[in-house]
Image 1: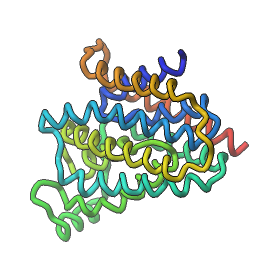
Image 2: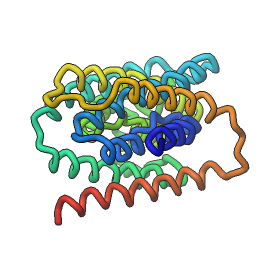
Image 3: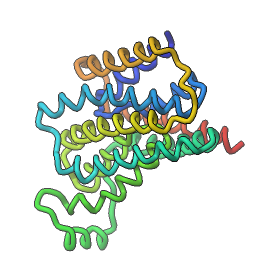
Length: 261
């Protein structure tokens, strides 16, 4: 019951921000599952369900930029799939250390009041001059390798990478917040699908969780993702997002320090 409620609340909360929820799913499943691989598979399945709901909503609202999906979302998703091969060969302590490190970094990004990154003037002018684009500050293809690197790192940690995609789009390419969140939801949907597919393909440990329990988990994720965006809470979402970032940072710090000690 605690597991199902935790999944529902995670989907409910993160669907408000256009994220898949892997930042909370993975620590939750690490507590209930016997192996990081099993936890990662469940995390990506829930991410796929959660992101699918929000992605359709943003697509209908015309808040999805297909070009950013191609240049940022696809490299991210492909490298998340590739990471599944590596995960199947890494020992659990290393996976927990990677999870802790990624959660710490993601928590810091999520806690930022605005996803705006400060670039030095010289680099910024260079990118504008040699990689121009009509609709963005520079061509988004420049960020494809960075998106791929983020996807590989997030894949090892069992999360989809939306928390890194949104700052890249809104902070570096100066995309509007609705388009960044909407496009990220589609990228996270692809990441969830390929992440789950890679875990199924490369799973090297027996999957021990009951099928009916998995079905209940996915149902809770779906219901939370459906209800979250429709409920108007009397809270400041920016403040709430920063609180979530702080909690995620603390969880990541616990995993990293626990393994190192």
